[in-house]
Length: 410
Image (tube, rainbow, N blue to C red; front, side, top):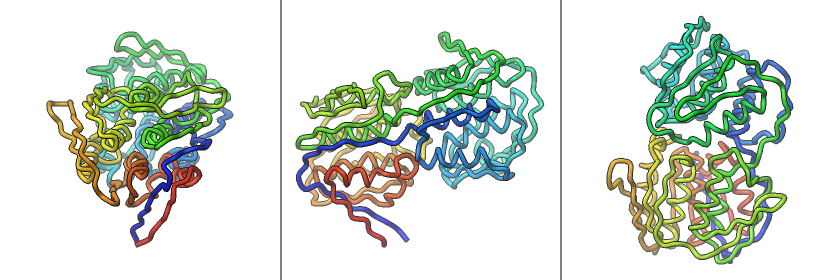
């Protein structure tokens, strides 16, 4: 049975205070590190996102077959976790997860002495993980232009390796703030590392137990920035965000300033107010690829011309996000074209439909990125339950600021 949701907002005026979900990026790293420490750590404000709840359950599971479902960090982090701790597991996921490449990570772990076999197509899950024998090797070269999750997975297990790890990152480093987030959390739990130029060195060390409180999620905040930008007027407070943040998506503050949102940091979070926006933007999403869908949908709605780079990792996410965006902006009379390798241009059109309808492609960010357009026209979101992956209360929170939310079963 399929499901859809219709959104509309009668006034276009937004006021309210929203408690955002906790960052699943921080939470999932903290869970893996705490498990690697072998000690009890007090982790507070863990994310309610399905990815984090799933990882918590799987880390406690004695099952031989582990289902990472559609969670990329869970698949990649557990691959390294099980491989280096020598746990014999079969690691699988959804059909889409088994289409997402993992070869770069698997080959790196194999070089270090891990036993990993492909049970299906080479380079993709499912994986059979065996005992760790150790190769004595500590120097690795890893491509860094595909997914920072591979690098984070290797770094978190690095202190447990007999010789530690010296990781040389080859090529343009994508999502660098996520790598730095990983190193900061490792340091919080007692492990030091050196990140000089394109080489990260982690010596053999022991993690220590520590208390850690997960910050609110800047990725979730991005949808509220989009809502403010599309509103007639707004005064929105988002609770639990910090000005000094580990999260790369904190970049939304500067990006959205150009798109019509002023950020005021307060003691409890941020206050968002509407301002004038620019008409033409050129943005590099290398450090914050998860913001791309939100910005594309917003620019299409506001009629802003947008040039983008740094989208390499979007092809291997929950869906091919570039293709999904190209299809969905067509319904807004906009076009998203790759004008040269790695360079994309959004040409906005003029909205003239009474109701917009968007598919979600089993991707939570597609649903949340296009929903704010309901401030311009009523919007139908197909398969809206995908938001459970990172922001289960999203539709409920929209209702708190005046959206009419109608769920339909078909």
